Length: 204
Image 1: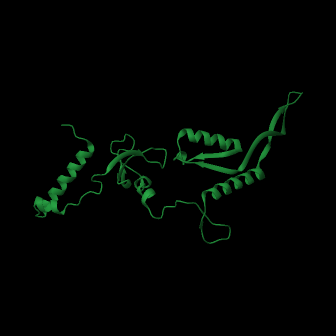
Image 2 (image 1 turned 90 degrees about the horizontal axis):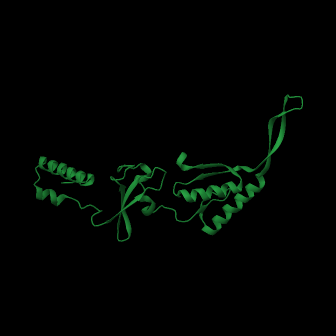
Image 3 (image 1 turned 30 degrees about the vertical axis):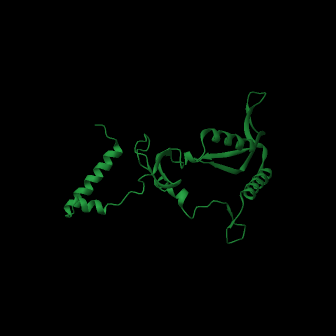
């Protein structure tokens, strides 16, 4: 008879509980009466991938009545085999934590408190600051020393201007929450702004 890893673990756990109850002098009926019902009973299981990093650990999400009630590692996933790091294990908090931020917050220079602001204002403000920094720090050329061959066959070090079209004052760190195609488009956008400091979470 074929048995899955998950069923084996459930059976082993039940056997251990029964053996422990017997050692305490409890009958099977008394043990069953004390058994707690799992909160995932009757819930829908959906397999997904953890969004936090590039490893792509497998997860099982349990939903009931349209709400997430539990998340856990997928024991059948070939990469993580049911294990999760601290970030993946707390993924449940993304949906159900009452402290989760759903709108951007802004703290002005010199202010001590954060205030909730609208998305449109936030995106416009970010765009304005990026443009202002880029306009102020954009370099079209950069000086560099090179060796030039002279008429007499000798080499002489001279300083020349090279076209660079870049800004060294803006950096960007990519997100593991976006897919490969989105990363490609984003990288193209950043290059068009003249950014040279472009990194990604997968390398950190």
